[in-house]
Image (cartoon, rainbow, N blue to C red; front, top):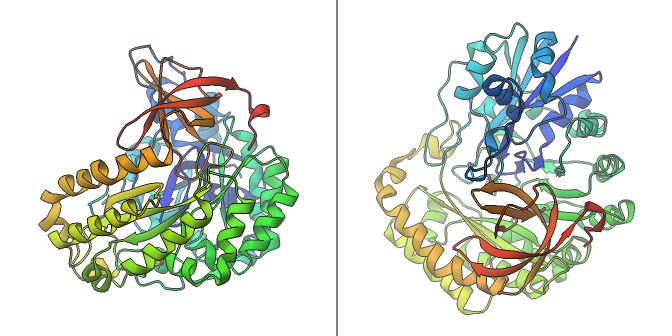
Length: 496
Ligand code: SF4
């Protein structure tokens, strides 16, 4: 039986699998199948369908084609691989749509015509089994899924003891990926609070944590295969993990040459509850710098917090932001502050009004005026999924009502908070080390460090892509920066 995994990429509240991240789903499936499995990306498939698997050079006037950028080492043989495939497993699903610098996740509408004439059995899995939507402010994509022989929920119905070996064996798919990848590591799923009106996590998973040794074995396996960039990102709150500090210590012991170790979601309530701030101190000590705790604050308006049973009141959020700044604001080796909060704000929740924006601005200004730092403010319009309380009550009522204000609200935050904040975080002449050149847009090259929510740096000229550079900051845009190259480096010289 010949299996092929087609990775159309995934993005969820807890877990990212859009390049340069490698998500967990294709890895666990590869480990489970326990035979030679081909791993393809949606980019491989597009390149085959659009250009007969031939890579086109980007002309100096053009932008890099990010729809065919993330090729596997199998890209030249896609046709043959698919013709010989007995079962095609499609991994797909975007639940928290974002902007992706160097990838475009596949949608159901895109993928179905591309695979419909393949003779093999077709299985759909990943978050898309609960719906998918690449654009914020909309309901899930409507699609007739009868093309698929099976809609497979098993990736959401397992116990961690069932996948502990698969997660390690699945690391082998890294051999089919020629570029560097940030390995998204799962430590737990489900949410012990689990009430936010818009969130699909409590529907998908019950609360469970992986065994510390299983997590370590998986990371060590990737490390042996050459992976050096890791994010402990697939969980709803890193601070809730019973063994958070020990895990960080042991990763550093087992993987002495790793280059990036970051985390992702953190519940601000748990930061405030953390006794003597032990977890915060350990994150600063054992993770690499440029690290961010993504706080799902969603709104600073108490009316919205209550109406959507959000987990963090504004005063708690503020306190957690203060604590992280106290320990993490110093500049680390990569030129970024060691560990800062990032916050998420969602438009379109129940009870949203003009006052919501006023409350958001009031708290954001207070944070800025007190000299605190927020590494990034992620603003998105809610995507509405069946099964959530928002779907059952309210749906897109507030989205429709307030949509006309969103550009203004977002712009207010970008101009008056993000922009001055960015100048505080990375003043001119700061040198950001180990920025990876990812794409061209005309005569500009866009680079990023590997990490959790790295800053995008625009550099004049066309640098050699997929190489590392130390870059001195020369200016600030609203959410990105400009810079000039100080040194070009090989991966061996990338140290933190
Ligand atoms: S805290 Fe809310 S948004 Fe975060 S995972 Fe739990 S239910 Fe979802």
